[in-house]
Image (cartoon, rainbow, N blue to C red; front, side, top):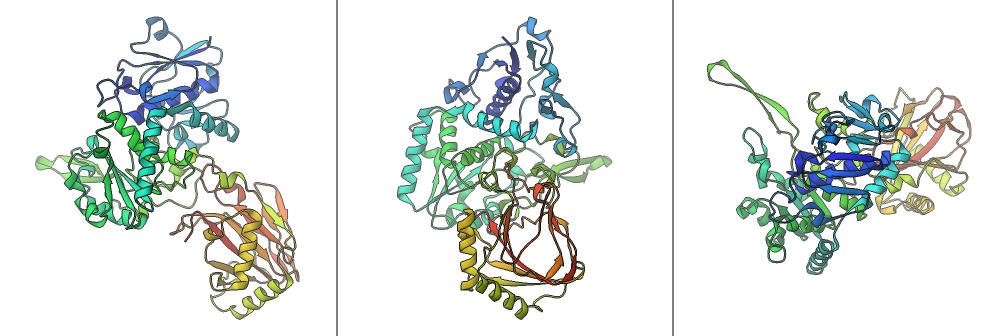
Length: 539
């Protein structure tokens, strides 16, 4: 039998979510290389519990065995993966690109170990979210994501208890929102985590959680007065860990039920670098919620240099950045979430533990969509109406000289003709009308104008990111201006009345560069077109 002998992170002396992610990584290696996994940890119970171990909380559906003790010497002398797996990129047959590596130089191709019947990890550095550790092609990632979602599941006792709490909450309030405030070992000297106050968290909470909703607070903070500022704003609040004590006196069991309750809340805001928060975000995805990966405050390490007595210099990495709307600002480009965060270069290789990454999850919206062109979608009366509007509003904005075109905007909320077009387009493609951006953009482009190669901006606002673009073409009396999608090898010649759509977010929740496109030069005449964007959430 082919075997993987695998150290559980920190010899099992770690929290529930950290142990889960470590076990998960071992199961993925076993899955990719067709091996049974033997897990080794000297500690049987989880920290904070006297008698509850990981297998008491979770059921594992895979080929595995647990050993509470050290690896046998016969195994320790066998072939091994390099040290510090969590600082590496793991792959199987397909090498990662530089963007995925993000500064990591250790690449472990598991295919290189196929000829060994038994392999092992060399140490217990096996922590990390699989989305960052494993470089997988699209087919592999879909398979592994589905495998992970089924391989480790909470036991029914805790699922049933959580559903009972969720039912009670939803009967007592129209909606409930959850926040996870990690304290505990996050309160350390020379870091800002211990200095963060409830007042600082309030702006993000108030932007996300309606005042009339139940606010459920999930935390390991023992001092209830810490939350006074939040409780004053949200009279309808619930410190869930305190409420669960009678039924679950063990803190580890209480934590799992609390986590599962948060995974069903209408909105959730977590602690940035907490794997407990990451697990909540994952289960929210599994439960079908639109998880926006919101955080109460930033923990991005930023250097603060202090001059001490005697001339000694002390550098403290301190989080000072505030998160607008609960999300760290990302750049527009970069295939992977972690490329767009602008973290310090000396920190980026170490993101294995930092948070759950959206790249883990296939986006069902994007999976169902591709480039679609529908000839003659617009009615003649609608085309004439839009052409007249383009003429009326031609000087609404200055001429864009680089692309030689004018732009104007129609608000579909107050224009019944435009609103009807948008509703019909949404029904045709299965988009949600409530998620449409209010403004429809009109473009009039002249001879010599062209639209250079670009990927549409995902432009995040109160409705979240843009998920898809829907384009309409209003005339034929011009020459040139084909639409090219170079990564897809598709060229379209637009026609009067045609509708075209394509996604902006790929199946792993990243901006989709496959739909990069351009419009070639207009050699004669004037082209008129318009478009609207579909967003993540409703207004």
